[in-house]
Amino acid sequence: MKIPKKDKEKLLEEVKKLKFMNPMSSESGVIRTYIEWVMSLPFGKHKKLNFDLKKAIQTLDDKHYGLEEIKDVILETIAVQKRVGISKKSILCFVGPPGVGKTSLGKSIATAMGRPFARIALGGLKDESEIRGHRRTYIGAMPGKIIQTMKKVKYSNPVILLDEIDKMSQDWRGDPASAMLEVLDPEQNKFFTDHYMEIEYDLSNVMFIATANSLDIPLPLADRMEIIHISGYTENEKLEIAQNYLAPDLMRDHGLEKSEISFSKNVLKHIIDYYTRESGVRELYRQILKICRKAVLKLSEKGTKAVDLDIKHIQQYLGIKKFKHNEKMQNNTIGVATGLAWTSVGGDILYIESVLTQGKGDIHITGKLGDVMQESAKAAFSYVKAHCKELGIDEDILKKNDIHVHVPEGAVSKNGPSAGITICTSIVSLLTNRPIKSNIAMTGEVTLVGNVLPIGGLKEKLIAADRSGITDILIPYENEKDLAKVPKEIKDKLNIKLVKKVDEVFKSAIENEVRH
Image 1 (cartoon, rainbow, N blue to C red):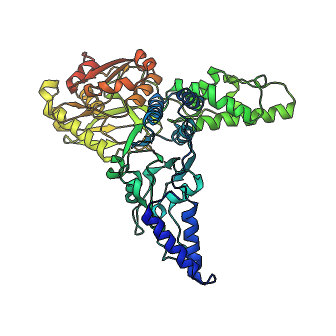
Image 2 (cartoon, one colour):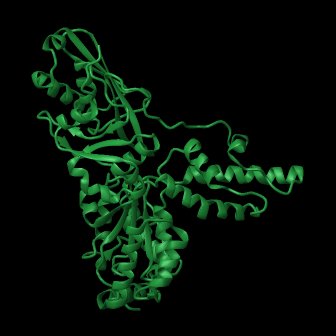
Image 3 (cartoon, rainbow, N blue to C red):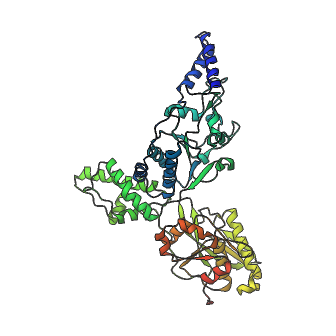
């Protein structure tokens, strides 16, 4: 066995102990199980890797649409390994919303590289010994998930997918996230020691890939990984995925021929727009599955040769429309501004309304807003109060009235600072009696001195704006770098303006004419 000399001596001592022990004793069973575990591990047993880049590209493209950045990282890794063999490498961590293909991507990477594949589900893991194993002094002790997986794959260079690494938690049994530090550190995992095994096992040849829905990962653990963000799919990307991957696969699974049912682009777009609201494609998969199931039943019952599937017939298969996308306002309105929001299922637009009520110059905020968004509204109000003269606002109005800011759809929780300039614009429009242009949407955090700070989720927000028929967008100047990640087809449809100060927002979004 290809193991260090000191570990081999330790094992031989265990064998010697077993040799002189009564086979019927309980201790004999413990030692025998331990030796069998060690003997079953693949010490230095490597699977021959695939270094054919063309074949790797073909494998990845066959299973996944888009995701070019991730495909490039994989191809770079294969190219480096081809040149220098196994090298110290960073651990990849795919972070993105559910249903965008993070888990299946891990399997495709293993196939592309010709490595064995194993998945370890970390969701809900609380016990540190699940990673590092139990000491042999405990009854029923066994190695942790890492060593168990190595035994299962039978090679020392697999791809191991650590699924839902952000869902680990801790309690009195220990912190599994801390136990993962040694596993994921390329400098330390060469000498990984499981509590049960008590000998070093080399994990440096393993390619670890982690997946997470959010960056809610302990900092020391996140520091050991190369974070790759996977954003939600655009409507066009979903259309391509549905047409080239989901629909053909599901038709084949249900024994349907092309002559019996056809999913046109219009039908798929209708399903995406009105029956799904998500960043990934899981719900879209389920809706197409439902249509295939019903189509098989129709073909069996009536004995017809083909099923009519067009927009008129969709309701028969999927029921009434589940969603309607928010659409832009038809008229320019005083005190109603259009903002852009990021949600866990992609981007959306939201309206922020302001009205004057009799009072003493306070602000009231409603719409199930989180602490950060409430603070953002208060900061916007303070900016307006501090700049009344420049903005042409009568200070007496503020002294005698309260301002009520409301964000509709009160049952939906909203949070984050990116609605700052939208709230500020709504309040200024209300106090100056000047309408806000209905074709403009905005996003950005506002400070007390009127600076516009950058925000996140720009790609999803711009997709939502385009979907809602909005043509002009105001975004923070510092978000210019993020425009590179926005699809060209979206950028070409929108007139995007970069702003540094909130007064630039007012000039662009609020009409000059006062309405009485």
